[in-house]
Image 1 (cartoon, rainbow, N blue to C red):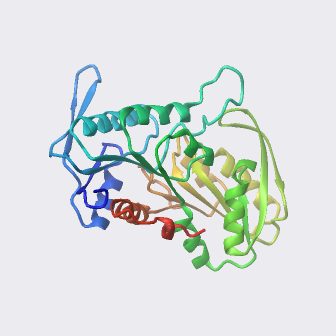
Image 2 (cartoon, one colour):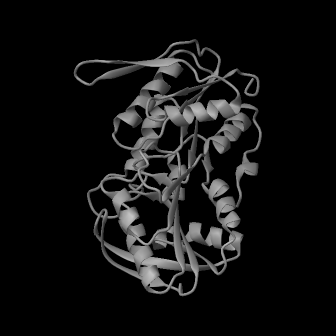
Length: 312
């Protein structure tokens, strides 16, 4: 039954562009849905075609505003009430993921709450990419397919054929990810150690390792204000790095982040299209993740392994 249920792919409003790319890769049409809006800001999503007995994939990144998450929850609820066989949430960027633990007293764990909300809405499976913390998978009581941006970034870096390549993590939390790239690309690795006064405000940063005479690639899961990336790149340039490139799966790019990138020593910032944004910088290159998500959706529909989608 699992492998023979018809597949239908829908999208919430924020991720429609990526969803259309995914359905093009799958060779199908994006499912028809609509949203009724009320004058006070309330909205009600609706499926405009039958989903009874179908495997329904709903594509939506849950970056702020919170309406993106709530719209996904409403779509999941609507699909369950319309007798969908299975409802799979495809969340290229899982928002609120930085709230993965109690790092100080009297704070919420937002990523766990988001997982609970998705489960309560009735989701049967989650497909996502580059979670801010791997342990978030354990917050769900349903299967989670965790994909990695390395599927598009690692081949791109390899094709650059950089001599004296050096992989860097912008903070200690990204050391595991940077180490995986370093081993795959057979390169050296350096780390950045930073202290924060408060979220998005860096008090102090130091570089652990040697960057002089090396071409550095900084690997991260997301770029928000770009303060960390810009500061790290400028420090590495001052220490004699030949070039600095940055790779971040999720381009949040809030505030004046793009201006910081333009003014920094970063030669190129490569991101995915997990989050829609207006690219006004010649330094920023966007690689699409549509193909890897399309292959994963196809594999889930046919009850096949997805491990072939992983580079490392």
